[in-house]
Image (tube, rainbow, N blue to C red; front, top):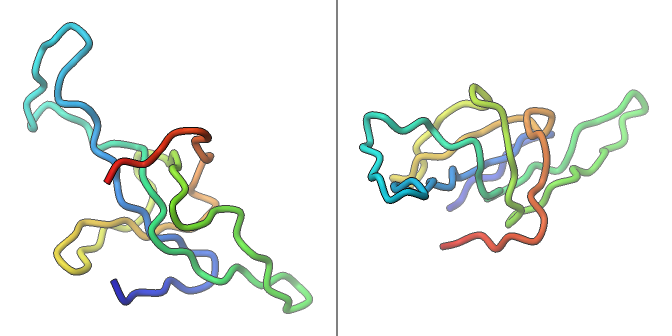
Amino acid sequence: MNFRPLHDRVVVRRIESDTKTKGGIIIPDTAKEKPQEGEVIAVGPGARDENGSVQPLDVKAGDRVLFGKWSGTEVKLDGEDLLIMKESDIMGVVEGVAVSA
């Protein structure tokens, strides 16, 4: 992907949740909610402060993050559905969990 976000923007790929419940019931696509968890694909250089210096972002490519239900703008890049959001829309980084391909 040849896309570089600007300022404090982050590109996130949603991580799909399981299609079965713990009890074995299969959830149809029409009943699923969009996942609020994703993998950071690309990050911008950071936001500028009052002095004009760039403050680097706390997240990096490869981080698994949680974000709000209505966060970000949905875009399609290279045939893949992605989200572009500000770093402030990210609620936190999920530590110790490997991102599946």
